[in-house]
Length: 499
Image 1 (spheres, helix red, strand yellow):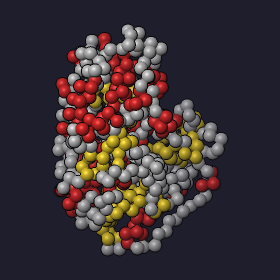
Image 2: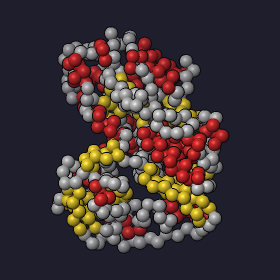
Image 3: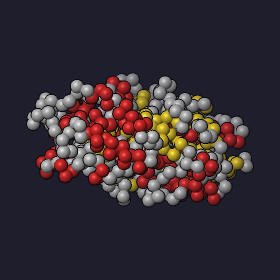
Image 4: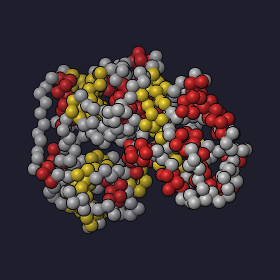
């Protein structure tokens, strides 16, 4: 979306808003209404995809809990999927979006029930960030965490797998469920570069680039550039994009990644990559003023990364690896590249997140490095010190739009992206797991087979699969927020233009 369009949109919303509020200040129906609940109503009325549902849902004196009030106004489709949310710690939310881990260990667990009784959980270590407490403690992919501080893992303590504020002792077995050991890890804060692994393989005369990407974070687009620069310098002619554990994230990262992959001419021409559709009112503003609701290839933040054209691989085909953990911006990338090139989709069908959101605060845009990261709805100068104090920690992440490809096509009816090369998952069987980037990995091996014509074989082991582990559907805070929908992070506006 063009930055100028967003600025004009905000001005239009401001004009509309003056008919609802006086002097840009909060005007509850009576003095007993929670200021935060009023903020929820004002923000959702303006931007929520289902804003029509806000009619007759104004807060009353009984709506003293902003979180409960927020949940009460959500559309059924939204509540069924768990897409929109509110937080009383917006600073922590922004850290999660930017990939800053706080009081964390450095491993990414897949949390599973041990059996149908659903009384005990396990943590399968999917990958480990380098130079973190977990990597320093010798944790590796395929390790299984069975206990925390000597206790079975249950719903009451599983969150410790994602971080804690003290040293924690994990009972760990290897990927064959053997050789138990106690591992003490002290958590700390660290950056999490989502470009976890990249390499160029030469197999059967083909130069195959492989990228293992863990999350769409726009502030790491420069790392994507570095990986693709390496691919280009090595003469790679094929690309395998491994998104199996990627829950999604920023629109800007999806556009940048696509700009490194798509045909060079389309990137140079800044062709439409995706189109966003908002609520009826916001769409009307765009359409009446002939503003562009599209995001385009080759458009990027020059403060965050170099020109993607300089590392573009000019491909005609890409191989994408997915599981049910692939969501949001992973789906946006996979789906919206299809009009421009052949996308060989390998693995499982995806999570099915075709919506988008942006972050809303009462008055603060949380500007960083010249970029306004949050959409405020009030003019700060019109709020009293007490009002600002009550509102300062609150933020909303409502669904504000749906995306389509350049032709207006979506996958809402299917509800997911269906692979054209389906592979039965081996994610619940650590005995078959290979290191990231191993040519014998069950998904990567299929891509190699399609590229080279080599027979596809995997050395499956089924000795522990009889346990029938069950996905618990539990996620880390950062993974949960990215799975809920594509994060529209490329909104740029001037604080003074809101009103």
